[in-house]
Image 1: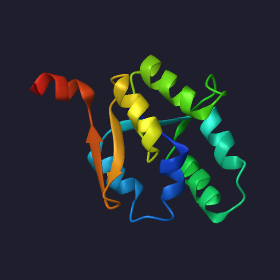
Image 2: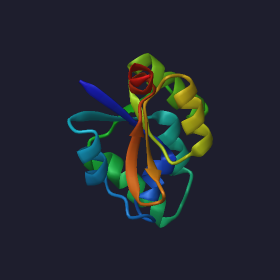
Image 3: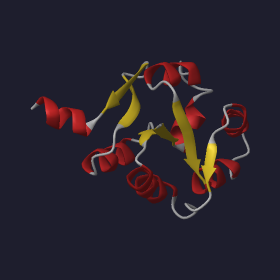
Image 4: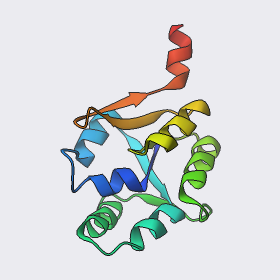
Amino acid sequence: MRRLLLDSSFLLALTELSLSMEDLLSLYPRAELLTTASVVREISGLSDRRARVALEVVRSYGVRILEAYSGDADSDLLRAAREQGCAVATLDLELRKRLLEEGVAVIYLRAGKKLVMDDPSRLIEES
């Protein structure tokens, strides 16, 4: 089964940008949605509307929380992506660079309006 890790930057952006979970699921269909305990803790530490919506998305879409990853959110996402064989949905540019350097597929928002996926393994195959 395909697995997709959701970063806090992605979850929090659902209220601000022209971005929806349906867009994500159409780009990466039939994926098991995951996030880390550290991401949930990071979002739970906020007390605004974005955080409430992000946590509701986690609940309503049945996002599985990986409890074993409860340290630094970015490091946990990188480690979980490698260990669990996941792509990662993030809007964090630094994290995206780190993930791509490690060979992890990344879904991000291009030009602030369209979700796209960079898959390093596909890029190597096309060379």
